Length: 79
Image (cartoon, rainbow, N blue to C red; front, side, top):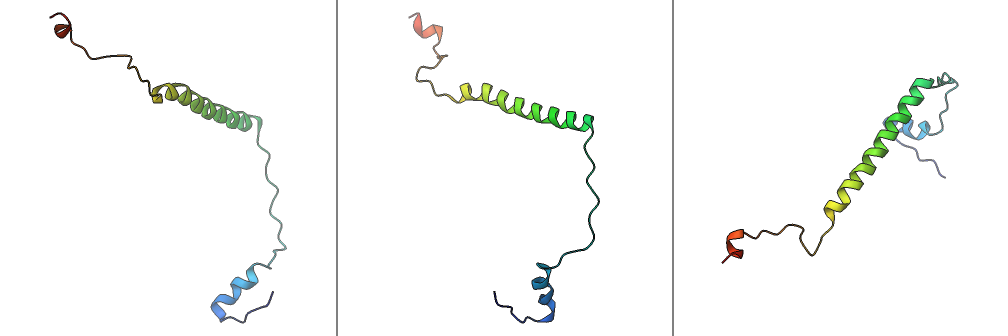
């Protein structure tokens, strides 16, 4: 790959891809048991919410050809 000579404001952008710091970040702290339990509980609640919305939403979206309720008045049927 060839190197372009750019003006001063944009020269640092090309150099930034190759720059590596010699400072190592501190190690990540391990999650405690209560944090892991809380995360898994939140995940379980989200999955249960999606499952419940599908359970109640899919029958409501079905299109029946025969309506379960018809609007006929009693006055018109007793003539």
